Length: 120
Image (cartoon, rainbow, N blue to C red; front, side):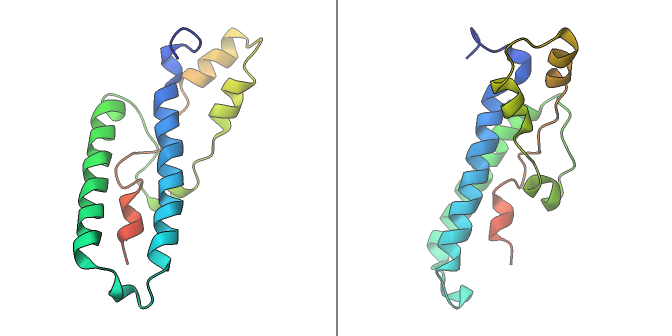
């Protein structure tokens, strides 16, 4: 994407944020199928949690080192919107000021971005 979008826009990070949002929704849907919740197979649950934590750690290392993010609360993760992606999509004819605003757009934290779904 570098030939099209400046690297300062963090397009890859925004794609990962979208992936995390879709994954949250899917996990919630899958976990809601178990009634009572205690009937979830523990081995599968632990493997899914371990994979999720490993993924989040990799994303923190890749995207958050030296970068400012929103607070790590569950609300900031859930309330993250994709206005940045929409602004980039509509970015034809951006002024220099608009470009600077996009550069400084904060990303939600990747830590707990999916794994909070496993919390009771």
